[in-house]
Image 1 (cartoon, rainbow, N blue to C red):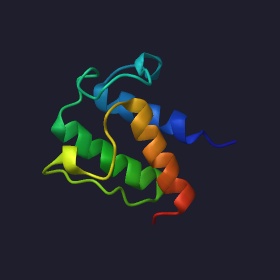
Image 2 (image 1 turned 90 degrees about the vertical axis):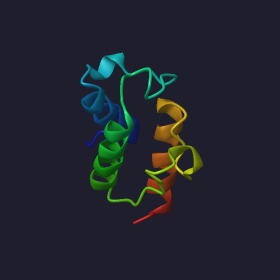
Image 3 (image 1 turned 90 degrees about the horizontal axis):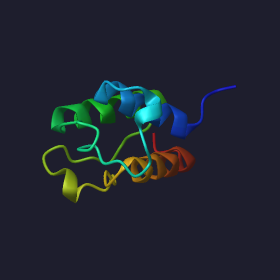
Image 4 (image 1 turned 180 degrees about the vertical axis):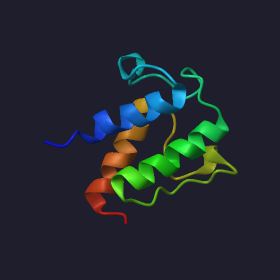
Amino acid sequence: MSASVKDQMIAIIAEQAVIDPSEVKDEATLEDLGIDSLGLVEAVFAIEETFDIQVPFNANDPAQSEFDITNVASMIRAVEGLVAAGKH
């Protein structure tokens, strides 16, 4: 059985934060986890590759992106939506 989107997202975020996946909490922001802008871009690439989707992300202005990076839970919801919509 394949891992859920949430489990895979937590693994990607944990890898970028260099922490154990059990330390990634839904309400945590990327800043809380120590993920900088480069880590965010690397996470977006990993998300696109893992889920075979195109993330609507503006690396130059993440706050104006269509991809919600408010916290871990919002990122998971965004990816679940993209996967469900088949955004390839």
